[in-house]
Length: 148
Image 1 (cartoon, helix red, strand yellow):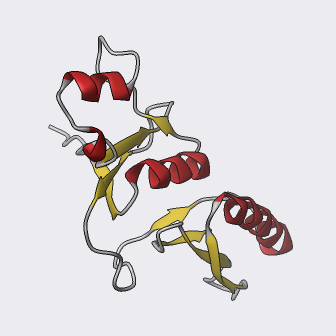
Image 2 (cartoon, one colour):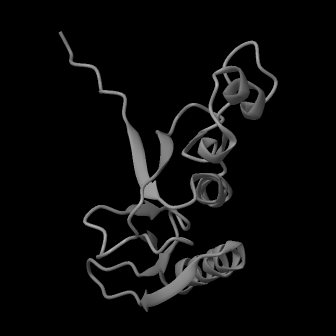
Image 3 (tube, helix red, strand yellow):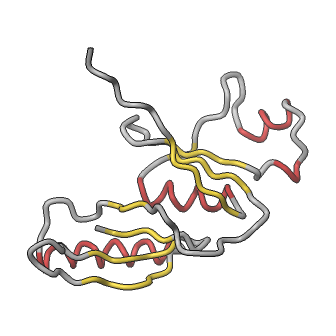
């Protein structure tokens, strides 16, 4: 019997789940998860569930519209980010490209993401034979990620 892969989601602790989930939906081409069946909006569902207005931004989820990638879940936590991430996302922005074409594609994507609220941290130029080059960014709440 061949073991099946385990389904998983990636969870972000953050201060503003709605805003951060919107940022990552734009970065990845994801969309906000639909409200539960029978509700036309999350606000209507949360109202029906008795969630007070001040708690309605405690969590948010985004999904891959094609169902291939993992769900991303954003949960509000009281503390801010204190140190470098031990796990981070690598956003594949230049698949199959090498050299100058690769770095030009990464730069174009970095410019788009900075316009969405990311912060540029540093560029790593290609360093053959193993280093293809990548750009390190931070999302609006300071979580590091790479364009590669």
